[in-house]
Image (cartoon, rainbow, N blue to C red; front, side, top):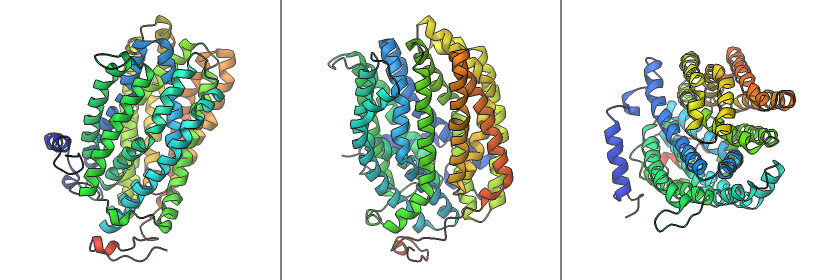
Length: 494
């Protein structure tokens, strides 16, 4: 039986795991995001996101470790390919972010029917966007890699990896949408459990497909891509099945998935700035590769290791930022703007101290950390310097993500985009460009440190302005026929 019918073996496994984690993690029914203390609900909301993001990063880390053992060229290829994947996904990811915000605000306003309609429409338009982007991506990834100055020895592997990922783009998108919508509702445990199941599958498949263990052919970097796509497809089947059944988290309804152009305008109004943010960030990251690719392959490989390490180290800040996004969204929807502001400021202070402590540990053990991913002494030395330059600024990254989460949750995705793009495109990229000449790779490492501090200052300054609070999105559109799905009174879509 299928994973989506509620009785398949994978569904039973997910349900069993979810029941077991209930002793550590608290469900949405056990805390209120709009009343009471700030720390407790934010902690229980964010903790599963930390684990989910850690598991999400495990896809990339496992690929990096195995491909690093396969060859240095394969490690460099995945280092080049990852920012391009980020770019392709970012073009359409704003739709899922908009869906999460709309679900959160309508849940806060106690309008379950409108939340379900928002979720159903988000799934529809995200699937359409992913099919288009995947199709286009398949044909343009090689040109993008050439434009970025990718080394001729790395280009074939990176192209093959990206073409396979492009063909599976619908699965990448669908699972991101599942996680976003469930998070907007306040359920962060279910996505964590589904992610765990699929990461285990990816970890098992990777070495078999990369090295050709057993009956499998030796596919190298292409094997890593096939393992990721298969795992994402499994996650999509499970996630969509959970939302269609509606026995936990937000429910999607087939009858409400017919494209509604009125609601599409609302999704785009919130989602386009988020896509601009993601795309702008992705462009900045890819332009950074242009600078990095002017150096030997050893530097490119070390850069890839460092960036992946940051994606792990910054997990708490990103998770808490997502938690603040949901908490701010529900409180804005409930008319509790002061509570939304208090939550974001509390999160910023907490994450500064947590990540500052992590920075100390990373600075002390930088060389040993890089050695986990590569046995090339040159890669280890270059990567060690990278981590040591950036580690003292980790705490500022926590501040940046906390305030950006508040802006998003309030529906002010344009504000979040402006701060984020200014940090990466306006500060990090220019500093790296000018500093790489006189200082070599260390100029790039310096750019990361400078931009982390500046991003925190900009986020705090905009938070102090307070204009981000005026972002209630619950009253300007409604779901046609949503009254049939719940008890709320709704008006027609404008």
